[in-house]
Amino acid sequence: MDLGIDGKAALVCAASKGLGRACAFSLAREGVKVTILARSPEPLEATAEEIRAATGAAVTTVACDITTPEGRQAALAACPDPDILVNNAGGPPPGNFRDWTRDDWIAAVDANMLTPIELIKATVDGMIARRFGRIVNITSSAVKAPIDILGLSNGARAGLTGFVAGIARKTVAHNVTINGLLPGPFATDRLKSTVTSVAEASGKSFDEVWQARMKANPAERFGDPAEFGEACAFLCSAQAGYITGQNLLLDGGAFPGTL
Ligand code: NAD
Image (cartoon, rainbow, N blue to C red):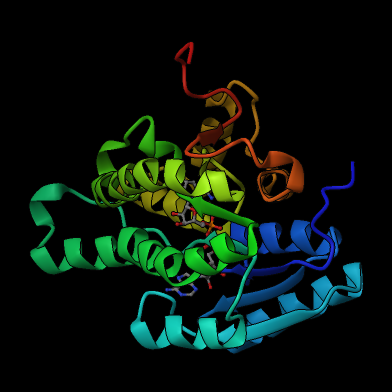
């Protein structure tokens, strides 16, 4: 299926590894010119080289922290008029809400709610003027089924989801859609670090916890980041112009509800 986005420009945040990287890869395979960013230049450049070699697409890199105003300025200077925006950043740490300070909350809300909102604000009117825009926010299955130890993530991402639910109905008449992609457990560095924390806290080995979590999923495996990237590319396709304000859960069926 030709997704009809050859030649479009995409800004893909937090994309040297994991889910962001997979989204950049899938978009580049469709002929999209991708600008990818992450904080550390070396892994970012390595990912850019891999994408160029595999797809032949133009890849621009910006080494920046997207949760800062300077980082967003640098990203938007490199890709001032994106047709596609994939919002992503590292997730907040797990913990007990009794230990979290106001500063911990501000950091989580900054990274996982206000940063995507700032980037939407900076790019959406250009998309509306050009009559094409696809915005995908990488959030979490915790938006639908909150996870107790991830309270900072539950709160910040629910805030973003509520904001988007309001504006996504205002932009779609201009062929600009805004949707959430909600990962369940995907085999990335992030998952390895959360499994490491659980293993340390419970006195079990990493492998024991990793295998148990895999088996607990109805698919009996973790998601492959490439599967996530392909779902993102579809939401960014020309054909997906009638899908907006939705929150697509990719979790191997872990969420037990009918809807
Ligand atoms: P990852 O650790 O594999 O990759 C994160 C990427 O983001 C890296 O490229 C890193 O350099 C970059 N990054 C982090 N903070 C950044 C910042 N401030 N500025 C710029 N770049 C930054 O993580 P992942 O598994 O791909 O997770 C992506 C998002 O999805 C996170 O918010 C995570 O909490 C969420 N999530 C992941 C899972 C999962 O199972 N992998 C499940 C639910 C939610």
